[in-house]
Amino acid sequence: MLKVAILGASGFTGFECVRLLQFHPDVTITHLFALRESDTDIYRYLGETNSIPKTCDVFNPTQSYEIDCLIIALPHTHVHPIMADIIKQSYKIIDLSADFRLQSEQRYKTHYQNDHSCKEILNNAVYGLNEFYSDKIKTSQLVANPGCYAIATILSLKPLTDQNLIKHAVIDAKSGVSGAGKALKENFLYANANEHLSAYQTNQHRHMAEFEENCPCPMIFSPHLVPMNRGILVSSYIELNNKQTIDSIAKYYQSAYEYAPCVSISIQKTLPSTQDVVGSNMANITINQVSDNHAIIITVIDNLIKGAGGNAIQSMNLMFGLPETAGLPLVAQRV
Image (cartoon, rainbow, N blue to C red; front, side, top):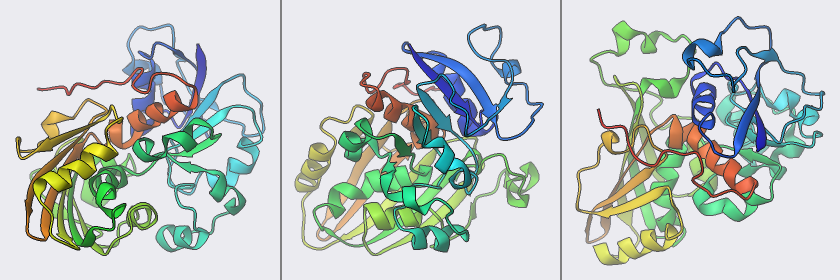
């Protein structure tokens, strides 16, 4: 059994990792950690189980814990100050923050307004896009989990950008409020979010840095907050470099995801909905329309599972030679 610890277990994504890993057939959760003293009682959310620690211990980055894998679910900018000590340990690391997602120190500083204090490790981290970088993930000590918008958008575009087929793209993205984490912000208060649809950070969202490094193409990115708990729907309106048919576009996606167990491809058969994926680690991609030099690609994911904790566990499975989908739900929760 793999011994796994979670740092930042009381947050939305950290707790999602706890929830999923308690059913993983090859994992034992041995430690729950926080950066400082916390009175958060994780046990209250898990029911009567003896297999998971009841509280979060304070994490010491210089201590050599008897674990195989550390999953870090801390806010952005909190990880790189302690990574130099963590990386010296023998266990493997999966970081769900943005601190090691970008290879460019300057791009990180531009998008996160913070100097990177561990820049020498940036090039050692592998971007955790399992569908494209699985070979590197399998041999890495440090995997940086992508952002939730980034996963949905890159999976939508990369089969085409890899073929240099995108002249311009407009990305209309909508997310449930859990995507913003637990930090108290005025626009996420119930009275401000409920029954309202709002745009934010149009063409300025931090995840655009991940697009630039993994599926570069001219684009406009417009994210929106939807009054639901979880789920992301990304609609990509693409101007192509040359004329394509729906069959030719479909072949690029089918080839890219032929061996991707957590991606499904549909061709004009369904109207995509977050209901199709919430509660699962699936990304559903629909090739909605192709005509002349334009295509419409719609992708839906659960932002807390495929967009965060589930994708991290998928990377962990690859890192330790386990079945890629072990411990991961692949069927949505229809309610």
